[in-house]
Amino acid sequence: MKLQYLGTGAAEGIPAIFCSCAVCEEARKKRGKNIRTRSQALVDGVMLLDFPPDTYAHYLAYDFYFPGIRHVLVTHSHMDHFSPAEFELRRPDFITSPLDTLNIYGNSAVEAALMKHIENGPSAPYLRFTRACPFEPLDLSGYTVIPFPALHDRSEECLFYAVTHEGKALLYAHDTGIFPEPVWDYIAKTGLRFNLVSLDCTVMIEKDGTNHMGIPDNVEVRSRLVSLGAADKNTVFIVNHFSHNGGLNHDLLSQEAAKEGFIAAYDGLETVL
Ligand SMILES: [Zn+2]
Ligand SMILES: [Zn+2]
Ligand SMILES: [Zn+2]
Image (tube, rainbow, N blue to C red; front, top):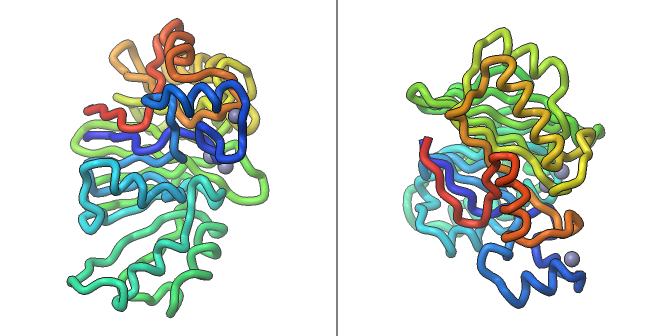
């Protein structure tokens, strides 16, 4: 499997649109890996993880083929993860070529947000929504996806996902605190082993664990995964989804992450499992 990070910022991006803090000013001037659009990742060119408002900008910036995308896994309805207005542009009057159905997966809040933008609701032939439920695996054309409950906004059932394909497994866990106990139980029971683990690091070097994570929380999660046999020395750990409130631009953040053996994601980072 190939995972490509298209965006690695939290809701406001870096530089944050209306902010003039030191992190944002430095990012604006130095650009490069300091620029972080809202979080989104692509698996094997066919599956998107989240659909932020920067999705179209990602399409223009990177070499992938949007009509070839079959599946969109959405973690929750926050605007940096789900920007449903774009889906209206799959209506036949906006497209002159034949179109396959695009499958969107998410919780009930994602479904409600999507349906506000789609004529004919769930029966639109160019889009199919499927409710993703914690611990109920989804079969997506050769990829098995396992939704997990996230410790995040308590007003909806936020999710994060494991994706397995041809003997490889990745865990993409953003906008979550430390995983809830049932997640650990499921991982222990099923014997999942991850080749790549991508962890929320919104607060960078701070500790949170209840809504987001920082590097100290990431260390705790890695320890528990290793103790369960779900990760080992060959598992790649990447930290991702950063806010300017964490106070660091890419170079300093990378140094802090490297001290713990983590790779700090940046927009465009590609990794093959
Ligand atoms: Zn977010
Ligand atoms: Zn700022
Ligand atoms: Zn969120």
